[in-house]
Image 1 (tube, one colour):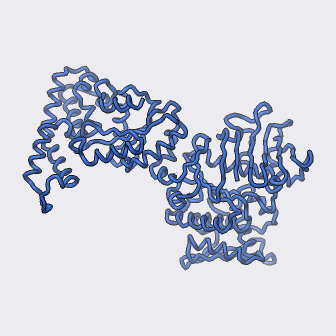
Image 2 (image 1 turned 30 degrees about the horizontal axis):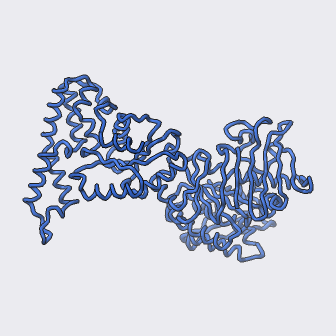
Image 3 (image 1 turned 90 degrees about the vertical axis):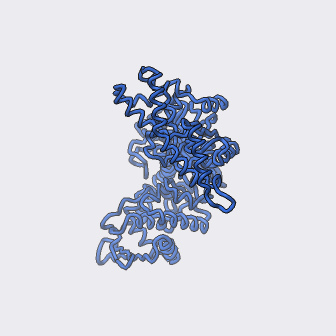
Length: 570
């Protein structure tokens, strides 16, 4: 089934091809919930026509009328005019349009501004339109998430319970729904419901009863972990799960709409819920399940399911990499797609002390190379050295900003040179996956900001004095640099100093450290420690007050390696 939404809330035009299960992901206010609301609003408009007995006309090809906002069975807001895309619905604007297409045909419902403050509503295509209009067998049911249920619940007539499915407030009628499933002549419905519930909460049992001669209220209790409690005293996670599978059995909809069904569930329960939804979907191919989520657990459990990524009201397929993108925070990071002139997404590790400060160093460094803030964004996550993940992110960004490229930033740390095994491997994988790789020429990004010319220019200090300060502090950190290099070789490159019997050759280790530190002290010296020492001396000996200016862009920060990287790309 294909659903197209035009001019609804933040969505200008979005097309979704529903599979047995379809997942919506994206940042808040990206359009996920709006698309779900649009489906339900469209179906409610059709059902409202049926409820008011609006006739089919023009050789039974369409039905049309005008409703006041409060006549619709469901609206996301009382003011329907405000549902129009980035403006108010008026007689001069286009109509809100939602289309459904399946093997029967295409049926479209439109909502425009009518006269006398009404909403003109028109539906075309009777065969599919009749299915959309059916209130007894609702085409779709909306589960917006449950925040609790009433303490008591009176027995309600069937039509009122059915309408609740349209309005999205069936949680207020959960006991009524449970009672009807329990008393259905098809006992398998209750069996199916309990079985699904027990897949997530094993050994949970429910009783529900109603005696009109004793009370107007329905009585329902839940037994779990050896304790029996009234339904309203059960945890929200259990209620939410119960609601999902109760809707499946009672309403048997063509489309089941779930808005963040994972929001009240433990990660373990999220995985179990995903598995059970998949199982139920396979058993009932006539039902399409659509849900929005921020849960990595659900995405990992449903890795082969069709997934759409919403950005600024537009929907794009993410193929089978949604879990990867969710894991690195890309699907919730709307800033990755907010700059139309974006050239680079610069990735860096976030498993460092004070990632905010680290990203500021990178930002000022990049600005020093002629890029402006509208041309790049920084994104940090653990494991950014994984070039496959970087290429997946690049493909996602390019769907919205085709010219954008990913640059992976890595501090060189104690890696000795470009022939280091890590550097060779990373460079090869970056080329394979068509992403750009920037490995600092110094130990850390902070080293660039210790450049004497940079400091002299920022604070208007005598360059020879700053050069002497710099050289002195490098020498003061020689022992620490040697120790860090020793630790790195022993822990990460021990093969360099082992004999044929896998024994450490201590003398060789000492020789390597002495040679490397004596010839490459400037590039091996740890940047954070060097900057800390320079800051203290700038304050104490040169009277520098505002040390934050040290982390500011300047021509002296330019790196030939980074400049060639972005120049080559251009």
